[in-house]
Image 1 (cartoon, rainbow, N blue to C red):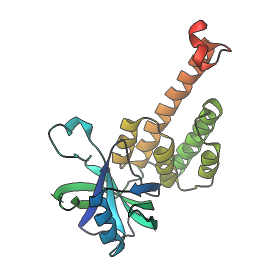
Image 2: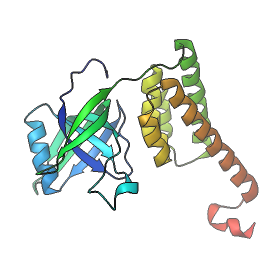
Image 3: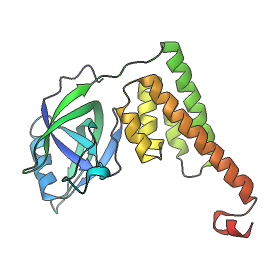
Length: 225
């Protein structure tokens, strides 16, 4: 998908906190600010494309809504305008992009981008093995953590392509926002699997240890153990 689309050099952009927007991900958005209403109107009248970048809090005191350098470009797949002028839309990720520069912030942000292409980083059979390993880790964590959607893990089992699998899994199930951004910024697919699998093993070990220490008490009574 990333290599099949001819991307424009300059696109509108939103900078949102704690968001890392991956290719193939589906992100619902509620558009209510005046600048983004104008942006959406222009986007729908043209190619329906805009970028979504995470907010880099480390530079937030010195810059206006500083974006992470690596972001996601998406296409508006559905849009419903409300009577009060706001809109609900669904955007699908198409490609990783590098934000080369911020062209303007008026009337809304527009950025110059460079399309990024992933590299396998390993043999096809090895990446498929990593895909299956990650699927097992996600299933195990689902059984241990009631906060994870079983329906989502079941859907992931239908995703055969390793790169698509790890990207959708990272977008929906990686709970560490710093790691999500790192996974988005990692072009080596095999390395993405390694990073995410390591975090999942750590999460699973932590849950098991907490349950062992907690005994049969519920979370709000662990202090009595």
